[in-house]
Structures are given as structure tokens and as C-alpha cells.
Length: 472
Image 1 (cartoon, rainbow, N blue to C red):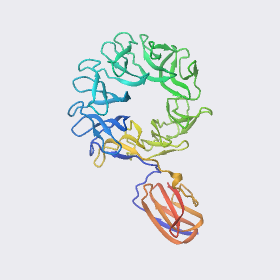
Image 2 (image 1 turned 90 degrees about the horizontal axis):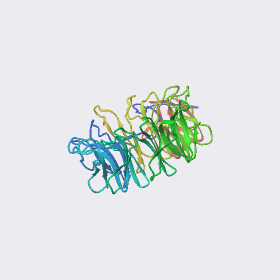
Image 3 (image 1 turned 180 degrees about the vertical axis):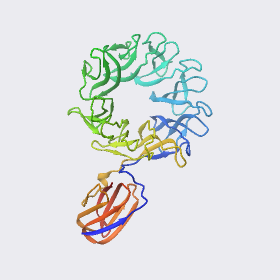
Image 4 (image 1 turned 90 degrees about the vertical axis):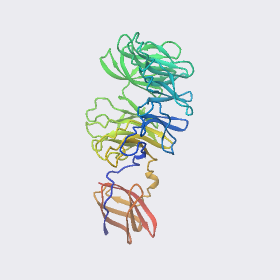
């Protein structure tokens, strides 16, 4: 067996990454942070809030090609109007919460052409009504707001007439704290408090006043529709215990399989963060296909520690999410239905890049992230992940490479002779090229930084095999 040794130095790879996050735009140049937040897609563009030099956080538009631009200075100067939280599209306009400095935080809209406008000063003057928890149901916009007299309650808006309060659920100046809106079987379900001072499940058909249902359940949360059922978590007063339940439209049932908040559905399988008393794992990504018993999808932070998966988003037939493996801090991971992979390190330390959203737009996955505020870093800006590396399409692995992963010593065996070897990083950069007498087998010593590489075997300039190599 012919032995070949080669050295490659000054490589930056430190982990076997799939397509890594990369800075999309440094909206507030340098070490400053634009802090993009609250994205929404509207008329072919992505809108979000961001800070610009000389301005506060304002409504921003990104067309997928050009640098994001500020749409309007709603609160003039260095002040921030916000554009929060969770804006929504209704009747060909974006609805959001903002302040112009004269009125408090109120309901605003933007049609993509004319300047943003306040819909109504629900709590007159400089006081704030803080509209939030927007949802569209039966051609109306519903949201939670406080008019200063009735406390925080559910309001409705038909797009034409002034918004009105739906019902004073908690009569008087107290707030109902309505939240967890979920549409199921043509009705709107939500959690809210009344004079009993305990949050319960309410049902609203769009016509009659909302009514309480399942009155022995308190503090309902995680309402989610999957496979023609509504799932939720609640405290059962009769059992004095927290339960995960499902509702089929007729009756309520104890849910034995989905024992945590549902995060996403991919290819018919539901993914959730387990809340059951599993002593061997912490809060990790679990999956349930509706037939077999639920299983842990990935124990990213091994053992009893938790990876705490969040911001789960479906992109290019994979799940992308934020998780902590205990080594790299909170970074972006991908999951293809079988294996979870760290996509890359936005901050090459355990410092949290503070990712709070991920959204698919124009064929790419966009996210907000902070890579640090030191010289040469960008602060909190807009990042993206382009289409993931199609490993199966790139591999032409007729050769056998072992052991793989390797600690450096690697054996190569091919049914076809080869007389050249090329080594590439995942960005396609050629790191080494070797020529030698034709052979079917050889052994090489890789003295390179731990990471993931492509190795191409050639004969007379033509590719014999292309394999992925992982170096520990």
C-alpha cells in the first residue's frame, strides 16, 4: 500500500457544518446594531423594524435584492416607533403597534404605498393601549388592547369602521389577559381571565358573545391544531395536575403522546419540546408521526441537560431551529428527519447570538443575530442561510474512505485506479492537490484542523470518486 503524507495549515474549519449562517446586511454599519425584529411578508417584500444611523427603530423594507431601506420615520429623530409585536397582514395592509411620540403605542397600518397611518387612538393622548396578539378570524382583525377604562380586553376591527371592544371579559378596569388565540373548526379559542381571576378557555364563533368551555381547566396554553385536533396544555383542577390534552371538536381527551409545546410540523410529523418526566434527557426536540410512540428526534445537549429548541422553522424540507449543545452556545441547527446538524457558529464562543426570529423569504432563511460588538464585528444585524448543501447530489462515492470520521490517518480504496487527490472545504476552496502513480489503494495522513471536507479522487483528470471526510 502506497503511503502519502501531506500537511495543510491555517484552516478555519472547526466543526462539520451544513450551510452556515452568513451576514446578509450590516444595516447599521460597523459595531453598531440595527436589531432587526418582528418580520412580516407583504406584497413580495419583507418588512421588519430596524435601527438606522441617526434614527431609532423604524419600519424597514427589504425586497430580497437591494439593501433594506427605512420606510418612514414614524417617531422623528433618534426615537423609536417600534413596529411591534408580531405584525400581521389584513385587508392588503400591514397592521402593527407603533408610537409617533404624540400618541402612545397604538394600532397603525401601512399599505405599501402611502405613509403609515394610525388606525385609532384607542387610549387617547400619550397613554398606551399596546395592541398585541393579532389574529385574523372571519374577515376581521382581533387583538388585545387596553383603553384605560376597561383594562386589557379583546378588540375587533373590520378594516373600515373604528375598532371596538369585543366584550369586557373581566368586567371593570381589570384586564382579562387574553392570549393563545387558536382557530379550530370555524371557531376562535383563547385563554382569558374573568372575575374568578383564573385564566380559562373561551370559545367564540364570530357572532355570539364568547363563552367559557372546559371550566375545570385553568391556565390553558400552547393551543395548536394538528391532524384535525386542537392540542393544549392546562391545569386540571379536578386532578390537581398539569395535563396535555387534545380536543376533537366534540370532547376533550388526555394526550398521551404530545407532551410538550408543538413547535412545527414537517412531512406529517409533529415536533415538540418534551415536558414529560424523562429523567435521562432535558428539554429536547421530540417527534410524533401520529401512529408510533413518540421518540426523541435529537438529544442535542446529551444527558439530563437541555438544548431548549426554539424558533423552529421549516425550510427546504428541513427543520431549522436555535438550540444549545452545551459547547457552542445557542446557535442554528438543522434537522432532516433523521439527523440534527449544527449549521455554523455565528459567535465562535458560548456567547448567545440572541436569535429571536427565523423567516423564509425569497428562497432563503433570514434571521436576526448578534456576532458581537468588538472591532471587526457587526452587532445585531440581519443574517441568512442560503439553500443547504445538497450532499447527495455532490457525492459520487464509489471509493471507500475509512475510518470516517478520522483522527488524521485515512485509508482510501477504489475499484478504479486514481492518481490525483484534491481536498476542498465546504465553500469550494481547494486546499491541497496531490499527484502520484496510479493506484487502487493508498493511505494518507491528514494534518489539518478538525472539520468537514470534500475529497475528490481523479484518474487522468477525470473524477473517480467524491467523498465527504470528517476530521476529528
